[in-house]
Length: 170
Image (cartoon, rainbow, N blue to C red; front, side, top):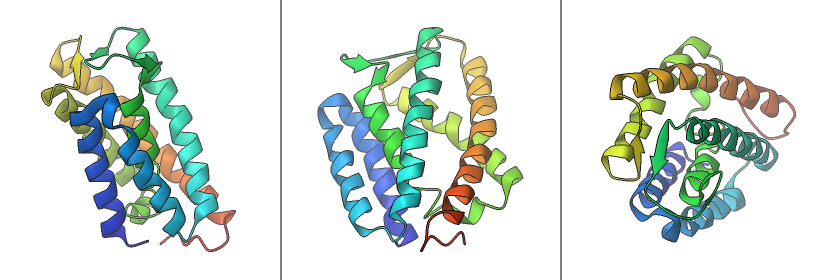
């Protein structure tokens, strides 16, 4: 799959979810289905989707449980449906548009520590969620979580690539 298409699907899905909430969360699921129909590495993508979906439920579910943030949308199981959709779409990036990070774990940590907090902060600024902690503490915690998470995601992606025929690690 073309990395530009993959990244575009993620970005469009992120905005749809953050701005449209649960009522539009089905649209990224259609985009995910289209991705899965076109991907040359279906098995590797399914591994990543399963792992990040579970990881997202655990990470964001824990953050909700400790009162870290609250969401403006009603109706959720652990976390809002729109956030689940973001985690599902995010899982397509390691095997496609971000595959160049698979063997650069320190750089992955930096990307995670910067990109994760920025995505949550942008979502909060757009009204999808509220941080219940002071902003600097919220961003610091997210930087630590995502600085650890993203290299682990890239390691998992490398492992999935070795076990999935047709999946090039780039």
